[in-house]
Length: 151
Image (cartoon, rainbow, N blue to C red; front, side, top):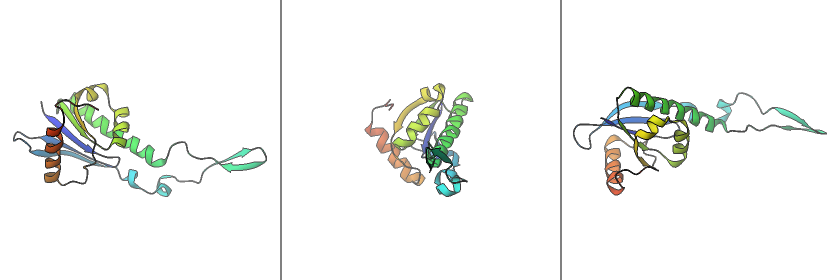
């Protein structure tokens, strides 16, 4: 079975497939979620609502930051894509390369089937790396850690 390397953060994800030749990476899919990088004023259409509190009025604050909501939407989209890859047998194993903050969001959205396919997790943001630098970083991290490290 093929292994997918998922390099992602809250606004961008790239899915690579390990090639037949050792250390060869081929980009299978790429995702960009621009809403995760937008200014809050562009994400939120109105000012905060008002609530009466006794004699005065005060603004209500949103319970969740708009950027966090968008990051969660993107994590759900990516988790769905990983699940489809496992279900259709396009891949059999997944290596996650994500920053710690996004890992939590992705874990809460990922299915049990996709979670069980995760063979390794590397807590790094490598989304901006060119493929040759990414390949070198992956070789370095994967050789330095235990064979089946799941965080």
